[in-house]
Image (cartoon, rainbow, N blue to C red; front, side, top):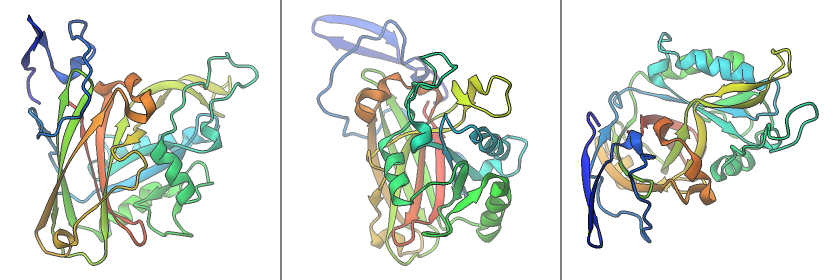
Length: 310
């Protein structure tokens, strides 16, 4: 969205005007309302992916705030998506807080409010079980190598991402995301437009997620004197999935098996009720929509995409 718009709402006999730019969702003039149903029409305001025709790799970082070695992986991920790194424009990074290291616990020697925010979500919990993730701080690159060789140590992430990009000079499918927002309540709508540049065999699914960047909170860290950093910057944190459990939506084979086959999915996300109400506290100004297409038989990701919620 290139500029802020004015919306005019009528409630009963009262007429009032308020600013409705998505960056101002918490504007004090916006009145809370309750809608029983999510929107079913295409978004009124759109922001589109820009370089969606480029092949992109999905990098997933298995993380937890009580994992004292995990900051090393976060720094490795940060380096890959840094603007100065040539890999940044072709890498979609997700920090996934999962497992026992992500528990909300009380640790001796720290304030009783430290490590109390729960960054786990239903999708992450599902993937933890499905892929038997038990190596921290390791990660997955496009989920390649299922089932026994999926996990890559953070020191090899850059080389693994580079290898994936080298093998895929062009994407087999593109994901063009159009997003919009509703300011009252906090509901977004998104269109995911897929175009298959190659004919793919097998069954494929589209997974759609919400990610929040730059969350500042506690993190155990062996590299600091106190043993923990209360101002640690958590990057690209997985918050939830549009379908809740993180399995995705089946893509019709009539689209995926044909060169230039296309398919569009329209989905909505409720930032009030999402993740059993936890979504109400997320900072939408820092949130992104993430989507990826994967092969149902081996879970390997063939394309990833992300766009900021505007």
